[in-house]
Length: 102
Image 1 (cartoon, rainbow, N blue to C red):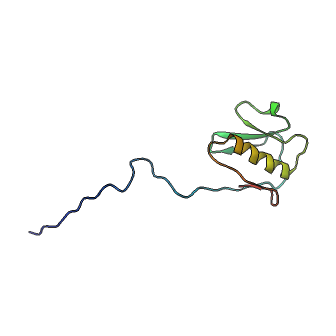
Image 2 (image 1 turned 180 degrees about the vertical axis):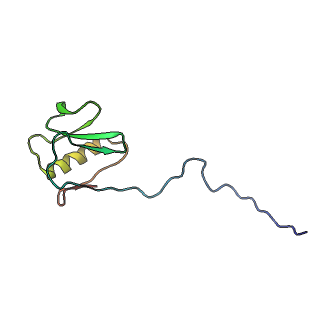
Image 3 (image 1 turned 60 degrees about the vertical axis):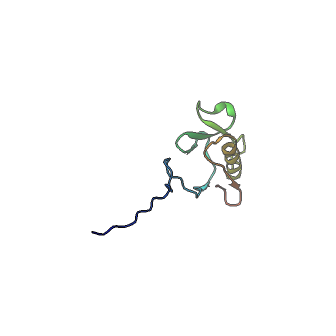
């Protein structure tokens, strides 16, 4: 009969849900002018709605106020501002060069 040595070590993993040390990224590209009432949803819970004035936003949505200037550059800038002011999930960076929000 052979005997071996068993070494017990402290647990190296957490009882909590696993976490990923790498952040997720996504890019939203505007290929045209957004239409008032169009929405962008983040995480299934944060709904950003493009509107002319803040009073026009549907209840529960977050206003992305474009005013009278309906351009892709304006939409990118205002969407990034709205996300950074309201989101608990992500932060956004606007790029007017290629009309993207990252």
